[in-house]
Length: 352
Ligand SMILES: [Cu+2]
Image (cartoon, rainbow, N blue to C red):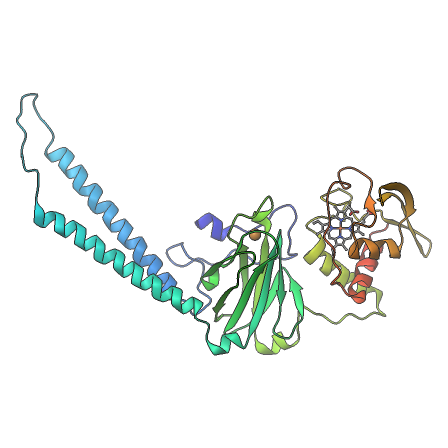
């Protein structure tokens, strides 16, 4: 568990360009630093932990002591005791554990109610988290969206509606001490109040397929002033090529890096390097064999083809193996501005 919480999801490709640093652990080296108001989770965790350690040593100690003390020293030694039953002792070792587990139950049940009873302030600040294989989409109270990164205001209670477009997932923010399963077709929600600013890991905690371990998102907890600048929606200066390229790179890092590379090696989808070459001031698209309506044909890559690939990826499938067998979901939600950024970024990868 320690490894799971501290490990940075540093796989060859990251969903997020700059994942949060490994979390600071508490003085016991166990839980990541508490960053929400749900401190009762830690209390219950350590209570259970200490009970386990205490009884482990108690039982093991009595066992070892008895093994040594009452061992048979000669072959013909008679049994030291023939007692078969002791009612008071049995009552004691039944009632004490019963009391302890009832404490755990009451503590856990109270915590569970606290976490699922959403206060008004949190319901007025409702986000939607949509889990899909293998990414997180977030929708803010004002309707704007971001992918694999979410911004929260410090000290402001927040509620998340949780939904899945495919299989079981789970919403897990270890630092906030919240974890909730996401069940396709069922209404789920969770709330918490972030208490410190910083970067936090958000994991999927329910095995959901091949790339489950890389289903990672980052939670940025910021001040209200910073939040109001909508960092997930940086202004795009359409007249500035460099701004287009930078934003294209950012969108690539959030939404396309799972399946595409920019270094020439193929991934789930073809690399973007070499889609265009630069000749003087012109970008010339490469020749691409595609399958359209079952027919193989050769086209020249241009802006229209890229736009179509983003909005209707199945219209023209790349004919090369293995890409012809892999699928890309439609990104019809990307507006023209962002597509323009992506095209500028893809062109910026062209060799001179
Ligand atoms: Cu998942």
